[in-house]
Each structure stands twice: as C-alpha cells, then as structure tokens.
Image (tube, rainbow, N blue to C red; front, side):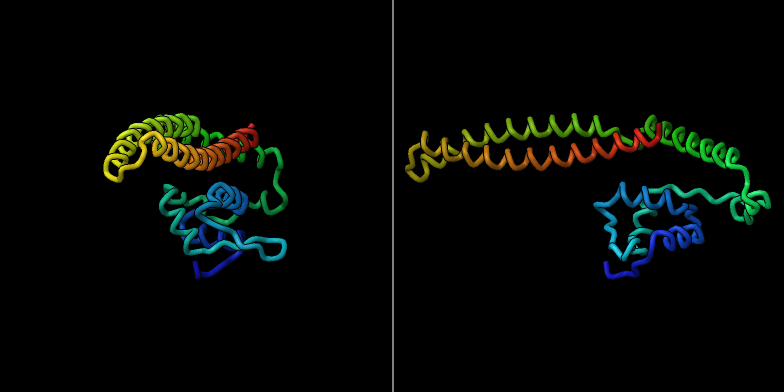
Length: 193
C-alpha cells in the first residue's frame, strides 16, 4: 500500500472520470463499509485513501455500467441556478429505489448473502468443528497414552482444557466479527428508512 494517497473527494472525481460514476458521499459510505480491505489515513479534517487499491477493489466488487450520455453532459441550467430541492429529493429517491431494486435482484440471483445466513452458517460450522475436535481428542488421547506410556485420563483432561481454551478464543473472535457485521447491516437499514 505504497501507492498514491488522495482525498475521498479527489478519488470520487478520478473514479468518475475513469467511468466508475460515484459521488463523494457514496464513496465515503463504500469506504466505511469496506474499511477492513480499504484503510483510510487521517489527514487533518479529511481522510485519505490509497487510490490504486480503491480502484482495484471497486473493479472486483462493483459492476460498472457504461454511463449514459446524459450523465456525461454538464448539469442543466436549472441546477446551476440552484434548482428545485423537491426535484433533487425526488431524483435521489428514484436513485435509491433503483439501487434497492438492484440489491433485491442480486439477492434473488444469489449474488448477495444476508448476514443472518452467514451468522447461522458460521455457528453451524463452529458446532461441527467442536464435534470434530471431541472425536479427534478421544483418538489422540488413547494413541498418545499408548505411545508414550502416559496416563490416558490425565492426558484427556489436559487436551480438553487446551481445546476449550482455543475454542473460547475462536468463538469470541468470531462472535465479535459477526456482531460488527450485524451492527453495520442494521446501521445501513436504519439510514435507508
């Protein structure tokens, strides 16, 4: 990440010029949502983002449609004079509705997975992993007791303690990740209302 660090406003302008039409506000939300993959660097009152990694990340995660000729033309005269806030609000609502329909379609196509499904699948995977550890522990305790002449009962107690400690740490870390993802999803749902 030794590339060029630029402001979010400049990144939005460069991405738009490169065909990835995005405004500063949308890009800021995108960066907040993908903060694990796209870190920000504070610079006074603003934040900087590494442009090459941002462009690569958006290239992998955003389906770009060619911009319509209307979006390449300068703003209409009414917008230059201040425009109507009602028409601007209506346009934003139409854009938001279109984005929601696109997300619904992507969900139906299986291109998106709700975090609740990820949560459920993760919990099932942890339960399966714990069962596999229990079975492996029994086999390994018997095998090690025979191989090294150790007391199998004591060895089983020690191995179960290590297993419990490791799984506790794993569960805590996974639950933190799931809670953070759920909070982010709930936060987006509240802002969309």
